[in-house]
Amino acid sequence: MDITDGSGLVAECVVTTVRPGELELAVIDRRTELRPDPKVVVIQAIPKGDRGELAVELLTEVGADVIVPWAADRCVAVWRGERAVKSRARWSSAAEQAAKQSRRAWFPEVPVPVDLAGAVRHVEMADLAILLDPGGSQTVGTVGLPAGGQIIIIVGPEGGITNAESDALVGAGAVTVALGPTVLRASSAGVVAAGIVLSRTARWA
Image 1 (tube, rainbow, N blue to C red):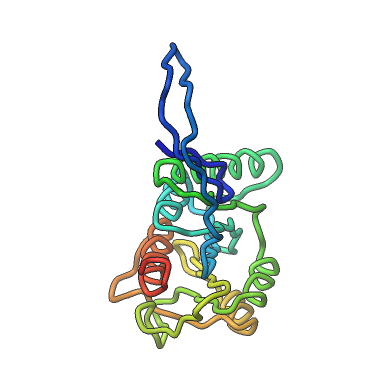
Image 2: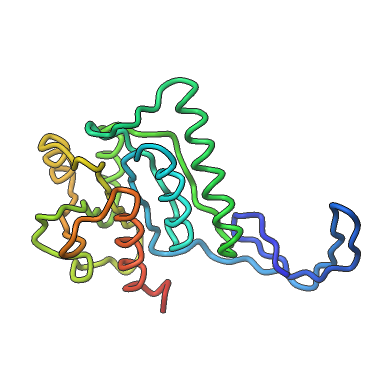
């Protein structure tokens, strides 16, 4: 069996002793895996209810490296004060558990929530920023991808993003890209987009 610290170190182990609630392992090999490249960051508008944790779980399984909660204007769920702390903790826990299940050597990061200004700053630092938009002139399967660096996928809320949000993100360098012929929910759109993007990189080769 393999165990990891979530930061690239993987130890191949065998079970030597089993006790109630406890395992004793012997390490037979160690390796360090490089950080995935390109890095995939998903700026996820906060869905209502438990759909946020579902989105985080699936994004982790598909390979997203950073999942940024975004308080978009049309989000129904609002994170403030203690609720923000607890909600982010649930997202982080969902990411960690999904990473273990998926046998990932690098666990995804769930940073503090961002507003529009924070999302814009992420876009400005990206090698490519994809803004999912049903009216986009390109599709996720055809948009040009960088060979490495950082790719950002921006997922709006159920009601879509506002014109002001779109203008700010596009002005910062994001390209509007359609996901396909149908409109997906906010909790599933990022997963599908990330899967298509990753399938076109060397990470899935």
